[in-house]
Each structure stands twice: as C-alpha cells, then as structure tokens.
Amino acid sequence: MSGHSKWANIKHKKEAADKVKGKAFSRIGKEIMVAAKMGGGDPNANPSLRAALTAAKAVNMPNANIDRAIKKGIGELGDVTFEEIVYEGYAAGGVAVLVDCLTDNRNRSISDVRMVFDRNGGNLAGSGAVARMFTRMAHFVISGEWADEDKLMEIVLDAGAEDLSVEDGVAEVWADPSAFEALVKLFEEKGIATDEAEITRRPEMTVELTDPKVAAQVMRLVDKMEELDDVQMVTANYTIADAIADQIEE
Image (cartoon, rainbow, N blue to C red; front, side):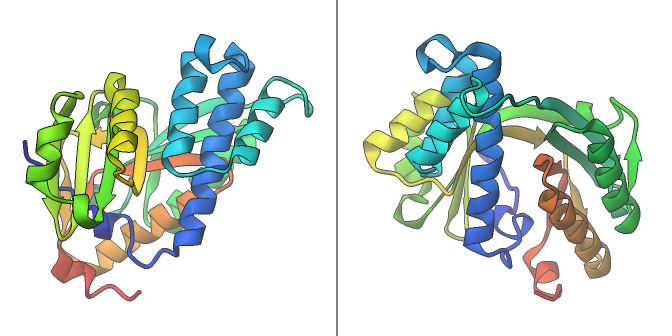
C-alpha cells in the first residue's frame, strides 16, 4: 500500500484549527439536514443520515449541533430546502478543481463560485470537464503516535482499507466509501483520533506545482472557495513539494 498526497501542505498549514473545525461543523450540519429531510430522522432506517452522523462523530461535533440539524431537516425548526450542485473548473497551472455545494439559492452559488475562479486565475468549466479525473473514496487523516505504517497496516486492511501512506508524522488511509462506517468504528474502538474522516474525491493523477507564484495562486483559490457559505468541499488535483511550500508566505 502506498500513496503520496502532501496532505499537510495541501491542507494549508496556515489555517487556524478553530476555523477548520467551524467549517467542518457547518458542512456536516448541512449534510445531516439534507439526509434527514430526504429519508427521515431515524439513522437506523436512513443510511445517508447514518453516514452523516458517523462523519459528525469522527470530528467530535457536539450532540446539540447534531440534534438541531436533524430537527431542521425533519421540519421541527422550520422547512429547509437545499440542493446539491457540483461545479467544475481549472485553477492556475492546469489544476482540476471540483466544488461541491449545498445551497438554497442556485444563482447565488454559481455567481460566488465563478467570481472566485475569475479573481484567482482560474475558470469555471462545463459539467463533466474534470469530474472523470476523480474517484469517490473514504478518507482518514491520522497524526500522532498512530501515524505509523506498521501499526496501522495491521488493523486497517481487514476493515477494508485500500491504501495507506505515512509521511512527516501524518498518515492517510483511503478506502471504498462502503468501508467508511467500519473504519470509523475501528478507530473508535482502538482509541485512534482522526484529524479528518470523510467521503471525498481522490484524484486519479496529480499536477505537481513547482512555481511558488502558481502554487500560491492555486492555494489562494482553494482558500477563497472554501470560505463560501454554500461550499461543502473543494477537491483539487495538485501537490506542492515542501521546498516550494516553504517559499509561499504564510
């Protein structure tokens, strides 16, 4: 099992932990609302809600936030209407970008996404332009004492993991989305904390950015896109070598 995604610098070391956590809570809260609205508030009878609750638990989302999101979804706190939209485009350097949104206003959503592309050296593309370059997978990030290939290898293979990489004290585990719940349960049982636990998209191939100016431009586009209220997730197929990342101003 091998892989190399430069998770640490792709996720932007400069981000504050509370900002990341707040965005995660907001993103997962919307997922819970939509899942509850579509399939009801009982996770035992609603696989989509069960998956969203698993993701919430993985990032230690407070129970009060979870309960409120479920109640909003089933209409106890007012009707909620969101639609899922995926926008596709390119950043500087030919980097492919997917932007997953949950929005109650399609016009606002596309306007905001297009503006971020336009102002940061990218461009919005048509449906299907870059989606084929990514595969949906379960993704976990682990740091600390458990970021050890030998330790993790022994326990994650039987739970359905397909790929494991460890670099600079950070481990990444990739698996088919169907193995997400099993892996979350495994990590809980073993007392292994996860920095990220989600079903995301993995690029089939990556673009290595070797020009610091281009790398900074791409990172800025991703940052600005992630700040949009309607955006749930931004996925891009780039890597940045540590030597180049160090040249980019924090």
